Length: 519
Image 1 (cartoon, rainbow, N blue to C red):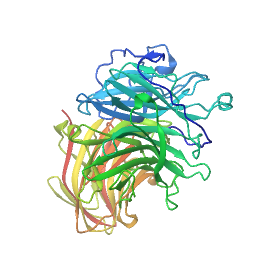
Image 2: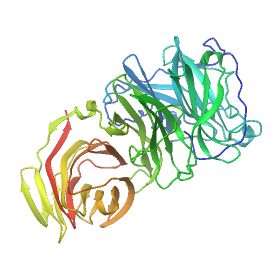
Image 3: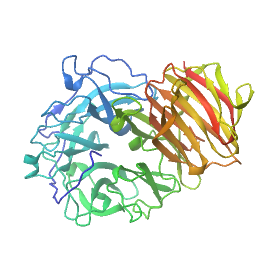
Image 4: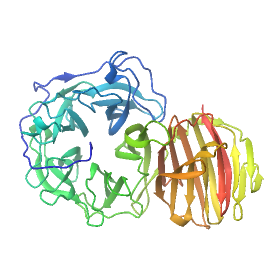
C-alpha cells in the first residue's frame, strides 16, 4: 500500500535475475538501542545518529511479516517525522521478534531511490525464499512530474539477500502493469508458493483499465529466478455493493480446508482490513458476517505463521497534532493480533498469549468516587442507570495496563469505560457499548460532549455475558471482545489518569474486574 491515487497502462520487463546482479548492496549497522520492550513498538530515535534531521524518529507504516528460523522478521515502511525537500520516503526497515514483547531493531534494509528512479518512494511488498536466496518484491512509487513523462507512477521492484539483512537491489527488474490494468496504482506485491498449483503467485493491488474497478490481479511463475512472471485473471474484483476504490496490501493463505484473502480499503465510510473466504484460491469468495478484524485505526494488516499460529500485523494510526483530538494520520505503532479459525471457516482475533503473559502484577482496585445506584461485591459492580446515570471512578493507571472484566446486561442501554478520566470539565476517552446502534464506539469526551473517533459493529444481548480485555501501552489502546474482535485506538497521556465504568439508561454488571501491570 502507499497512498490514495490512480493509474494508466504499462508493460513489464522479464530479464534474468540472481544474486550476482550488479545492483547496489545495502546493509545497516544499527546503533546500540537495545531491545524495544514495548508491545506496540515504534522505530527508535536517532537510528542514523544525532545530527541527521531526517532519521531522528519515525513511525511504523505497512508491515511485511516473514517467519524464518524461529523468528518473525517484521519489515515495515519507515515514516520519518521530518522529510527534507528532495529526499525520498518510506524506506524499508525491520524489527525481529520471537515473542511479540521484545523487538530487535535491525535498521534500514532497503533505501528509497533518487528523484529519477522508480523507488523514490517505497511501497509495500513481501519476501519469498527460493533455494538459498530471499527475494523481496516491493513497490516503487515516483509521482514527480518529470519522471511521469516517460514512466508509470508505480511498479514492482526486487531486491535479493542471503541473510534477510543485507539486500541487493536487482537493477534490471521492473514489473509494470500489463494491458488491461491501470499503472498509476499498481502496488503491494504479495508473493507466495502455492503448493496446490505448483507455482509462485504474486498478488497485485490495482484497477482495471478501462473501467477503474478495484481488483487483486494475479501473476504466476514456476521459478522467480527466471523472472518470467505471467499475468492471469484477477483473483478478486470489488463488487458493485462494495465499490472499493482499491484493495490494498492483499494477502492470501490457506488454513485447514479454507482459503483466505485479506485486503485493506481506506476510502469507504467503513474503512479497515477485511477478509474473504473460499474453497479455492481462485474463489468464488464469500464475505463473512463480520469481515473486519478491527476498527479503522488498524490498517494495512498482513499475516504470517510460525507453523502453528497465524498472526495479523498492522499499524495503528497516529494523530496530528499528537493529541487525542488530532486528525488520524498514516503510520503509527505496530499492533499484532492472533488469528483463530472458527468451525464455520470464519476467523476471529485474540490477544497473543505472549502479550497477555507479561501482565502478572495485580493492582488493587481503589474506588475514588461513585454516583447513582451501585451495588458492589468485591470486584463486581452492578450499575443501575435506568433512571439516572450510575458510575464508578477508579484510581489512576500507569502507561502499560491490562484491564479485564466480564460484562452483562439486565436491560439494554448505553454503558462503557472511560479512560483518561478527568472530573473537572468532564473529559475522557469513552469506549461506549451501544446496543441501540449495534456497535462499540470510541469518543473523545470534551466538556461532557462526545466527539466520534472510531467504531466496530457488535450486537449485544441480555442473554449473554461478554469478556472484555483492554490493553494500553504508551499511547495505543487495544480492546478484545470475547476473543472474537479487536478494537484499536490511539490514546495519548493515559499514565496517571483515572478510569471509570458507567451505565446510562441501562442495568449492567461489570464482574471480576482486574487491573494488571507488566512484571
